[in-house]
Image (cartoon, rainbow over all chains, first blue to last red; front, side):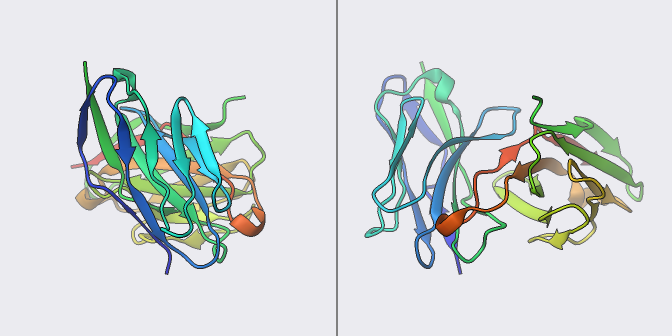
Length: 113
Length: 117
C-alpha cells in the first residue's frame, strides 16, 4: 500500500542555517506529493505541492522536488528564520485513492536565534 | 471567505458524556474529513465524506459517528466519551477530482482541543 516516511524530529537549527527535511514514499504510479506546515496552536496549511515527476514545488523560500527515481520529496530552505519553527508534514495522494491523503508522522523544526 | 471553521475551540468532558463537534466550510468543497492529532502520532483519519449525505470510515472510526446532512457542514459525534478520546480534532475539506495525480489539497480548520476526564 501507499506510505510516507519522514525523518524523525525534532530538528534544531540556528537562524540562517540550511534546512533539509527528508521525505520518502511508497506508491504505485505517479502520486501527487504535498508538504503541509502547522504553526503552534494552529491547523495545518499547505506549504507546497508537486503533481508529476521532476516538478519543483516552492513557497515562502521552501522548495521540494518530486524525484521518481528515488521516491523522495525532500523539503529544503536555504536560510531558515525563527518564524519557520513549526511541524512539517509530508503527504501523498495516490492514483488509486482520490479521497484520502497518506500522511507522514510530521517533523518538528526548532530554529534558535 | 472564512474557509473551514470549527466549533467549539476547546471542550472538557467527563467520561460517558456526549458531544458534537461542528465543522463548516464555505468553499463549496465536495470532500470533508475529520482527523485526530495526538502527540507523536501525526494525523489519523476518523471519518470522511465524499458528498452530501455520504460518510465513510477512516483509520480510527470506533467511538465516533458523523453526519453530512448539508454540503457545507460535517458533524462529528462522541456518544460516550472516553479518556482515550482526549485529542486535538481537525476538520478539513477538499474540492473533488484530481486527475491523474489524485486528490487536490486539503484545507484545514483551526482545531478543537478536547479533554476527557
